[in-house]
Length: 222
Image (cartoon, rainbow, N blue to C red):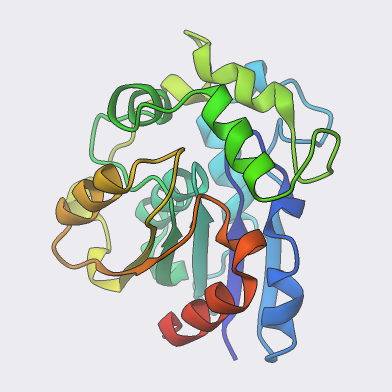
């Protein structure tokens, strides 16, 4: 049995993992699904700091029983930072079409400068997956903070030199509109110890290819 912590992405909520948590629990794994501050909990995302997002993940971490951190989209940035802060509490990192940052990069710089994403593309991916406005998996105000000059999205990543890359696996999404597949490859290449595989899906395989994603996650567990 593995301890698993699932971390959602931008403009989303914990419910954006859909049936994946239940499917993993059905295999006897201990699964925690994080709700990031400012993403459906009533907090103003414009006032949330990166440390608060990381703390929400760290709350479920324990060095006496290391966990697998699984980040989707922006969630990969948060799990990366949590792993740098407390590597002894992490048994493995799994990225699902996620941000895998280098030192100095921010959520905003990856999204806007490298990936070329925008709120329209994010919305298109949810619609393509059949997730309509008003769905509890969505949280619009968090996405709007993407353009803010003073938010958690502008705080830089640090600690890449201590990053546990040998314990990381990346699930790429071939048809992703939010994080360009080429950019996903570049992020993987920046950390030679990261293993990877490709899914023929868009940005939300947890919705559009649930069976395949769960199978790949189970195979990637330590």
